[in-house]
Image 1 (cartoon, rainbow, N blue to C red):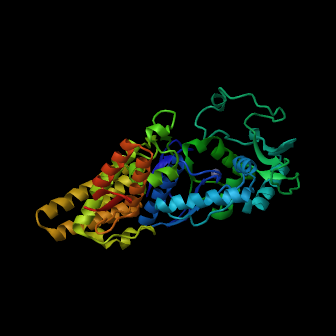
Image 2: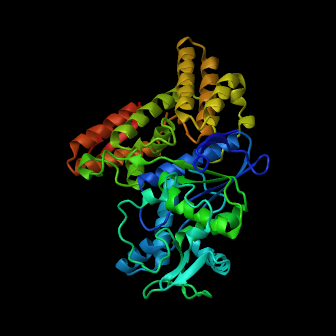
Image 3: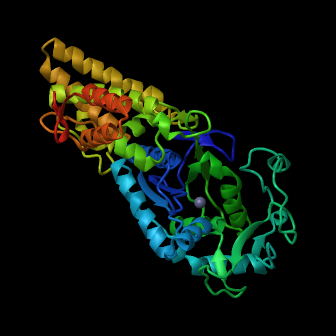
Length: 463
Ligand SMILES: [Zn+2]
């Protein structure tokens, strides 16, 4: 069974499911008011890997991830641009799914939208008011955290230390600075819903607790998100469930930060500005491999250099596939180990891979085994043992596919990633950024392409 670091317990524990053989997980999804950023790419890839791994291991997984389609940022953008909130949310949700498809991130089984659950949120807030856990002031309804035992469990540090440097709270009616809003009273120029406690709209923390319990039921297996969601978002979701007397997530697991060369993301350094930007300029699979080569809880640098390293590593794996011309698994659906017959002859490697993965998702060690398989395939091919080479390459493709990494032949055709690099190179040349153009050419060459300059722009063909 997969063991991971549970933030509520403070140690690595087995994620034993509520029901044998079935696993339920809730992943806090995006607020759709802008293009997805690099941190979005990290969390969504991390939990896609976990989901795929659980399925590969033989579990039936229900994966729920929400879309926050009403919040201050969406309203702000709609007002600035003279559009409706719905229009803004629909545009950026479209961008979100486009990026997810490019990353080979599987669609969640359920995608609850906040605006679709307002009635349930109103019922929950009414319950919290009736039980005395919530109170109403001028600008909305708040949860009284002093009524919740163990508030601060997920923060992992004394609450008072979290207040250091905090700006003075302007709302003097709140009983405690940690009390948080469940319902924001209606303001002019903002969408609102009618409720027994006055017109308004729900707060973010209420959205996730209501939707996760509605779709997965009490005591669901895993609640996840980025490290930044531990406190206050997850703490506050949990506080509401405790106040309601409902059993909430059995386990909480969080992924680490994305670091981009210090503080500033500078365009002149050529760094990626958004996830969308990265996906246009690099092989989308490289981000997944970059993450797999790091531990999910460690901070990672996502830069031109680190993505470039991952692209070159990927080119080595693709080259094995091209050389052996093996059939590739379809990673648009999660793989199941029992159905991967190509692993039968490599059960020892597959077992070692599973042992690494199950040990707090030790993907760096698991990925090292992929490169060992690539070496075995190449050595066999060098020795003229084509069946041996093909067997090792097939096992490699299946294990890579178990974590959503799609290897490619690339032979005879130019894949989309390469075409995107060629277009990015033309754009760099048009902008007289020749260093970037050279870098992109080198990348294409490292990926096994011949690069030609023509009057119509960069042309690539497999080497
Ligand atoms: Zn959430």
